[in-house]
Length: 227
Image 1 (cartoon, rainbow, N blue to C red):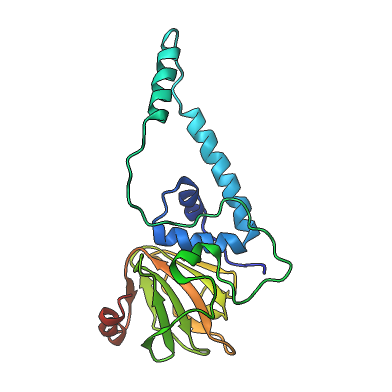
Image 2: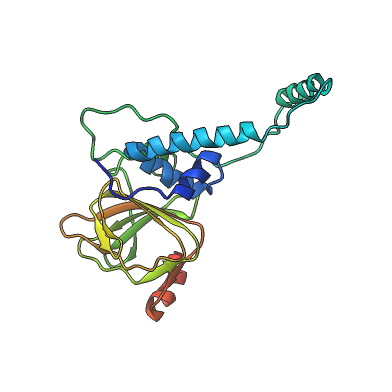
């Protein structure tokens, strides 16, 4: 699998800094598991971030160095407060390469939300030819199964959207998106995906704002499907 569509530089930097919203981080993790190119770019982003942090550290002058060091150690040893948080799988090291990729296997970052396999999913009807599963822990993290040859409504994005293709494919103004590809979109992109013939297109999407549909009918339906 050699993806042709990759994560945007700003997305990788936010992921490396731990600043990417949780649903987007899950989808980014799914792409990173399948894309060696983006894993290498992530390592470079983390190295740049570490260098910048090191350069911005204050330099102790004279006798203040020991006091600053003691204060830093005391802060490190202080117990952290317990905060409930939604677990987000974040692969840092490249996954172990399998000699045979199981097409039924879901990326590891999706396991806490959808399980381990495509065959184990329980789809819900959303619209003619469109089924979905919404992660219980993250309502804006959605798995979609779209019938072959289906033309989706024209839409743009309130803010950011990440979509990782798991099976099948679709075409839009940005090109062909096939298994392993990620669509990293912002509010400047308006598109109308059309799924390729053959098998259903299965993808996982994360939004940090609702979609913006062009047609009045799609806008009417939007409040029921909550996209």
